[in-house]
Length: 390
Image (tube, rainbow, N blue to C red):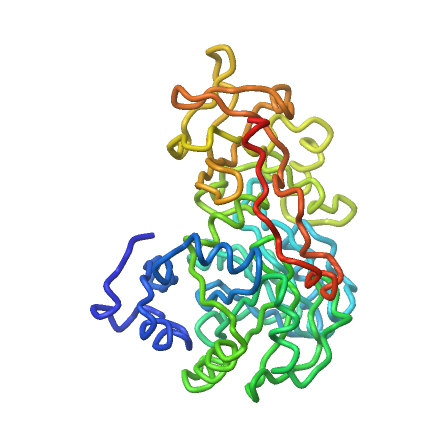
């Protein structure tokens, strides 16, 4: 991704329905594959704390979205992904991977079943080879696969006050909606129709609202959330949040066509009891994964390690760095892939000449996306620290 001047955007760059409102607030933007992502609104640390302690909203309109429609929509997802989706009830959401025939990751995605003949794959990749993979491996099924990214905006509302902020704006009661469930009927947020899911990329209580591409409707949703005191946030804050929670990022933590999902410790998201592309390779790797996904905690003031920097123990390379960020709570953190025999919590490693401690994924000991949303209002999340343990 690269920073881009919002006043000099090429016509082909996708902006999403919330762009003008964000631009008016002085947002800084990244461009990636002809799509815009909001970087920040001036202070990523303040935006981070808005999500950890209160509530923030993130424009995720550039997230890739494929609609699967037809009698075999769920069966197609069952064949394409590591999750068992055939027969999944409407309202079901699952997270899993799309693999190639050799068992290497092409993408990881959220799968959502709206009704028996409509489901979504929400992920990262829309390059021609990936789209061809989806169609090639669903040939003969009664399903239509359409890229609807440009037709659907998306706003993520995240933080302990997410339910309190959203509830008065919706025409549906979402108090009983569980983590990783979606409503199976369209709802209206500030009068704008769309789909609502309980999901997010922050490790906090959160919801995502998918709406059409109309800029006027996007501005109505944005204005209503701002009036509810929801803070705008960008990707720079999200990176800090998601690394604490150990959430994976394409091109940072894994590489399409190369990475084995077990080296990202995705065991819980691989259902081996159904036939999917890459299953044979997964069966061979499942019992003894050679690498594991871990958090590394550095000294509070240590600089960030470089991407793919070797991780050493006693001078021997045992893995490499994938993502790194300065966490307002925990200091310098990195996600790393380590040799399984060396991925021992509490052990010490060296990266770029600096000492780090191996910790679990997720690191965050107070994770609460699956909690009862009413309990998330019991008090603000206070700064935590693991620095004394590093």
